[in-house]
Amino acid sequence: MYLARVIGTIWATRKDESLVGTKMQLIQPIDRFGKNASEPLVAIDTIGAGQGETVYYITAREASIPLRHALSPVDASIVGIVDTIENH
Image (cartoon, rainbow, N blue to C red; front, side, top):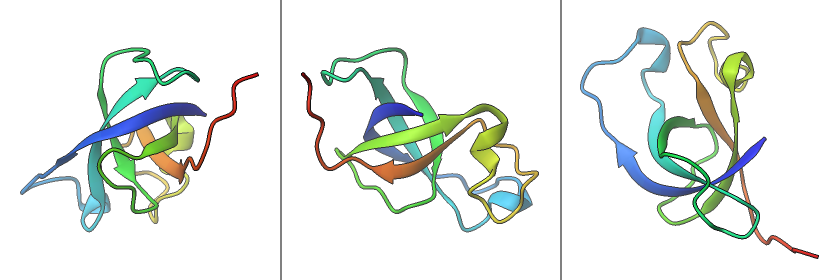
């Protein structure tokens, strides 16, 4: 799992049938200190995250597991909202 901040919502008038009804978010991967870690990417939102929230997401084949259709063409899925991060 990786950390990211939601920076926008993606609207698509046409998408794969298995993704109809899902929300797509633009996320900025971050490190544990909140600094940008790589380029932004699109992730399917499975939990209802909002703009500016810190989330954790999964990638690769596992990204389709939280969806209704296991064979959805998804590379990243948001699976949780982060309340706090404690750096020691």
